[in-house]
Structures are given as structure tokens and as C-alpha cells.
Image (cartoon, rainbow, N blue to C red; front, side, top):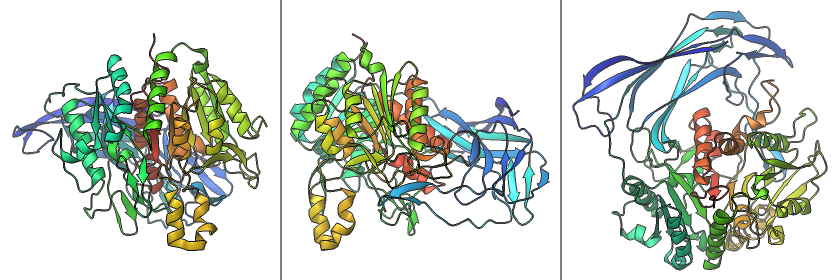
Length: 631
């Protein structure tokens, strides 16, 4: 069995001139932390003509698609914000060598859906060097939040087994000693909590938002309503930034530092435009090309939540300074922190009527939900996301199942294609109208529609809910928090203007492909579900771009890969953080799911891990008390 022995503060030295974050003294204390990890003997198994190697009790895998699957141990350390990590080292015991009969199993490629067909991320096997992995350990740093405090995360990936492909041998070490040298921060004065919640909106929405401001203050949530023009003109803080989105992000940084802000609610979606989009409140597009051949970027509100990098500097999302934000393509790659430093949500309102509708829903929800029986119900909807004769797992249903397991005390309604109680949108509408506190879809989508497959049948689609169905919802004040696993359900740049733009650029060719992306509908699926008047959701979390997921059970641990990696892991972590970890504020639950993912999967190692985090968007009030305030 793996054993971990942690030794805190084993060495103290006083050094000069090391320059930790926010330090004015010329001398700094250097501390050292050690952790010793012991590993079990490897278990070597044959699997479909390949070798599968396990290390019992390790908690992860080295899973580069197309490369050998090897066990890994991931350890996360948390330090006060301002800590400077000066050195990380992992020393392994003398390795033992084992000769293998067959090659090690390669990590399968993630999948997604394009034009109604399942595609893989990359069909190529990676060319290996003389030793894989080349380094026995790796680590990444990030600045984020933990239990309401700003912290530095240090996550170390240890690889006790390495592979020599030319000899078809592995080298295994029984023990690893982690040594971390760091400088603690000097004590810093925490800002007064002047405004816990900051709402940013255009001046046209101010009157409609004032009841929400008054209500939040009555609940003890100090709140400040700021117009976007105040941001641009420097009414509260000196305006800086290269474009409107960066100006907004600098404003949020100042609010965090000077007002103690924990939640930012952006109120405003598209306000028009055809060839050039217009927005009530700015957005940031990434420039990450995931290899799907048509999607070179997407919306990411995480940009506004990631304020600092691990050194305490502004997280610019343009590390190479070329003016192209969140770039990861053939031309360049920006190194990004991505850990959220506060909670950001968006109400993608297009007009004051929508603002009024959603404000009324938030106030009613928080004042009437507590203690109601309907809240303790959860509706899950899923099917076979990647039908295959050789894969026994129905991905959507497996993710639904795990989410329900996390939700202690909730009664589940399972709408599954495998049990034939999910046959179309009426089944979903009836379940929602019956009342539920949480709603979880997992399958496929676009800005207009969510749907999935029956078992083993990729040619048949079962539609779950579309934008045109949502006005038929009649669940009134019984409003669920919705999580949606699927492509583009949260793509909130949709507009009828996209139709004209497509016709101008592509002419009649537009109807061959781009038209069917449904980017020209008035409002995307996720936002429509929040903004409908007579029901819908109180908040929706969804993806703004292609949703990548895993299939099968490649490590043969009896747990389907779909819940252990990519979007399936992210979605189910949200429910774990609410149901198991008892995080009851919406924004914090969303933020912790993002943080959990970033700690487990280094965001700058794999494009799809990076994308999974960047596209995971909250449409709702981040300060929302899930389940309402007790009366």
C-alpha cells in the first residue's frame, strides 16, 4: 500500500535578496517541506494484446493521448497567497527493471461530436524517445481561492514508472521524496469587505437591477452596482487595458483588492452588430485551436475570474505579448494561470425585460425555496453519448449516476434512453414541471438543442429539450440549478445577425454547413433556460464550445473513463462540491469545480484540458444561495 509521510518545516534558513511577492525586507525566511510517498508493487496485466500496468493506490494516470498509459501520483499543496516557491524536487529510490512481453497500452483519444458524427481528437500515436516520460516528475503553480482565502496551489505529478520503448522494459521506484523550498509571504492587510458582490451592467439596465441590489444588501451581501461606462472612464479606479475586456478585468482586480469583492455578476449579452459584434458588457474570446478543423476560439468568462498568476502578477492571458489572448495554435502558445480568484457569473440579458425577469426569479428563489420538498429532488437526463458495440458504458447515464451518488439526501428522477423513460422533450418538460432543485443533462448539444442516443445506436437521436420547448415549461417558482454537458449549449454570442453575417461571407455555401450550427438563433440554450418567465432554471452551467469527453474504461478499474476525465469529471465535480463538500453558494461551487480540475489535470499540458476549463460558464448570480435563505 502507498504510504505518505509528510514532514513540515524541516529546514529554516535566512537568505537575502530572494525577492518574494510583496516583500519589502531585504531578508527572507526559506522554509522546506518534505513528503515521502511509498508505492505498492506494480501489477502487470495483459489487455487486448497490450500490457496494462497498475500501481495500486496511486490516484492518477499519465494520459497523453497516443502515448503509453502509466500510473501517476498527484499531490496538491496549498500555501498562503504571496508564497514564493523557490524549488521543487522529487528524488526516487533506486529503480527496479521489468521486461514486458508486449507494448504498453496507449492512451485512447478523447472524442466529441461534429456534424452529427463522433470524431477523435487525434488519430496519431506519439513518437517516443529513449525514455517515457522524459522527466520523472512535473509540477504546476496557480493562484486561486480555498475556503474563501487567496492561496497558491502547487500540484506535483510523480511518475514512479518509466518506460524504455526500445527495450520494452519499465523502471519502477518504490519510493519518492518530494522536497519543496519556499518563502512565506509577509503578513498583508486584508481589504475591508466593502462590496462582497459587484454587479457590472450598462446604464440602460440600472433601474431594473436596483431591486436586486436592495435585496442583496438586506441579506447582508454588501453590493455595488457599477455601469460599464464607469469602468471605462475610471469613475472608481484608474482605467487601464488594451481593449474593453482587459479594462473590465483590471477593474475587477481593483475591486478584489480594494473592496474585498468575492463575486462579480456581469449583466449583459449581445447588443447587436453583424460583421462586428456589439456587447452590453465585454467578452473575451480565446484563440485555442483544438484540432476540430473549424473552431479556433470560443467565449471564456473565466478570463474575468483569473486575476493573478502564481507570482502575484496580473494574469494577462497574453504571455507572449502579441495581442492575441489565450493563444494555443500553430502560431503560438500563451502560458495561463486559469485558477479563478473570485466567482464570476453572467446574465446574458439583451434587454430590460429580461433583466426584470431574472431579478424577480433570483429574489423569489432565495426567499421561498428553503424547506420546500421539491428542492430535494434532482432530475438527470442522459443516454449513450458514444454508441459502440465494443463499449458497454452509456456515458451520459454514467455521469448522471455519479452525480446522483454525490447528492446526499436528494431523490433522483432518471430520464435515460436505456430504460426507455426518456423518449423526447415531453418527458423532460413533465419532470421539470414536477419541481426539482437540480437538473443535469449529459449528452450532445448546440446553441439550440440538447439531445442524445439510445444504447448502441448512433443513427438515432432522442431530443431532450430545445429553445423552442422552453416557453412550454411551467415549473413556476420551482427553479433548479442546471448543469448541461454538451457542445455549445452555452455559446451566448448567438444572434440573428449571425445569419446575415454568414450569408455575406459565404453566400449560398452558408447553408451547406454553417447555418446548421444554429448560431443565428436569438438566444442560446443555456441562457434561454434561465431567462424564460414561467419557469426554467435559476442558473445554468454549460459549455461555450465543443465538449470533449472520454469513452470506454481504458485503465480497466471498473469505472468508466467518462466520469474520470474531461467534461464528465468537471460536471460531476460540481455536484460533489455541493452534495459532499457542502459548498452552498453557487459561484463558489462552480469555482471549486474549476479548481479541482486544474489541480488534477495540468491546464498547460493538454489543449483539451485547457479548453474544458475555459469554456465552463456560469449563467446566473454567483452569490446565489443554493436552496435559498432559511426564513
